[in-house]
Image (cartoon, rainbow, N blue to C red; front, side, top):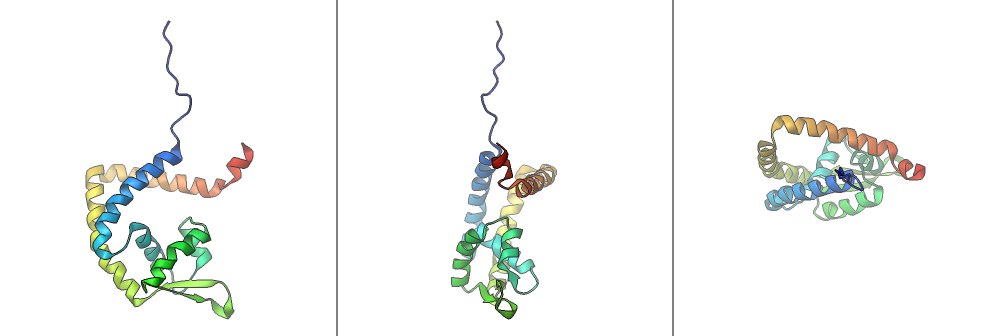
Length: 155
């Protein structure tokens, strides 16, 4: 009698994406070594640079889909390197972060190394496949933000 094999559990989306993230992060991190930063640090610096002056930390954390504690840990070495300044907001309200001139230069210096890694990865993977994957991952990110912990509460 033929028995069709059905996996006991589907492949975990989270584990699969984390594995891909770690593998790709290694490539970018190696490429960015001459710039003295990691791809995670560059992502934070670029997000800050897209802001308009002092970016509130809560808004920055939200845009990076990070909790504030993780963001504070990520900002510590950037502040120590002199790439960002963290100040009290208007009227002493929520803290804000902005790129320093040194930080802007660091992002510019990292750009050519990031571009080289990006070109290599997209060249190997294929631009059309990347466009599809980029949209799919954006949808997954939005779904994750929407569901948050709600999915666990329903289970």
